[in-house]
Length: 252
Image 1 (cartoon, helix red, strand yellow):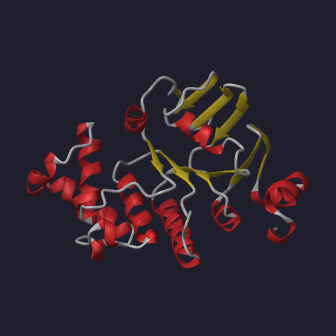
Image 2: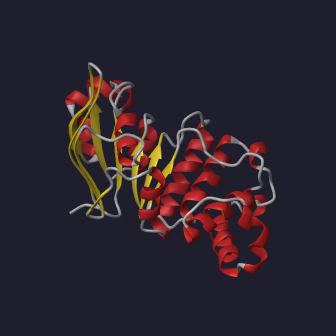
């Protein structure tokens, strides 16, 4: 049994069948990538996993527990964190404050800005925030205002905000979107470091094949709302349907 099990998920929007009998079994500790062209249903599928959409039929189990009908914050409290395509951070706050907020949310069950005033009394919260900032290489930027940072550093900050919640499953939606190659490579290195230090299962939706093949241990290919192939990166590279439809001869 995987940490994330999806069985026979269907989702229709009017006359459009966005997802068709999607099945997925993500093993604990793995990095599982989902690839496919624009319009394949990747975002719809991800939104079904995090509670933003409810499938018409099918089941979604996290650690053996159904997440259907639960709200996104309830799924988050179970141990599922999501990194968005555009980094979701508090732009007007410092790096330090951004990391403290999810620290308190994980402990208290809700996001709120008020506890920032009493952080001096919470040695355990401060210690956890310091540890995570060190892990993502941002200790020296703790006083920077988030809005002033590069896209790569904003992504690094968002990762820190996820990690302080101690997730069991991290869902990453196009984590390198809009990045220059140097920032992309730094993000790949960061995700590798996270995998080595913390046994967090990851599901990555990504169009950049350099990222996918650098990280994934398993790849599912989504096309027209259905998973057409699931295999190891090496076998995906050589699969004729995938070569033709998704990767292109020049990239494999």
